[in-house]
Length: 284
Image (cartoon, rainbow, N blue to C red; front, side):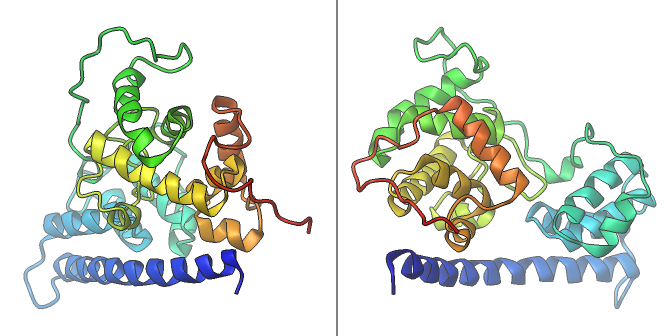
């Protein structure tokens, strides 16, 4: 078995086991929420049902995102809000939820509306001195300065170029420590719960812990793809399995846009990494 095939097989086993455990927790939350929503064997409690759906939605469940959106659209357990409902239906539709795909087309798009407050963490500003910093880049916001200090302190431990890590953080979260995506990627480097668990990140909203986990993941990808920046960026966005299957940058519009955005901030095609030459794949 070749190097990439072996790695892909190992990653598949690890990811499947982790996803299975997370899936059991999500299924239990959704089942309990449904019982409270419909009064199955217990008094109806729509507010508690919405809270439970929200917990599962925050874990990335399309079914929970849809169910919570439906309750908000109908004012059950939470104030009626079609804009917030559309936001949830859209998140579920992005994951292929059939009913959500239909419903999202019946409401006016509201990309400007944030996710419901129950899906967002408390604001976690970085507690770092904001004095002028020689590392600050003019094309990065002021919020990047304390992040850069964390990255500079930790990057050498993981043999990751700080400029590369900063480019990833800029594209992933815009240097917002409390950022959460519709798929529940969290924190500065947008770690999904499975990735946070994989790299032992107990609190993805703690800036230093999140950066440590993200750097560890980048280091693993750099080793896997021999420092090829395009492939590492594509894998960070779409998963290493997708890059291995497609033997290059996957043909997903989101991933190709992501790779291009990283390249605008970090122009080196090969990461300054002590390893082998960059990975290449034969033309299809």
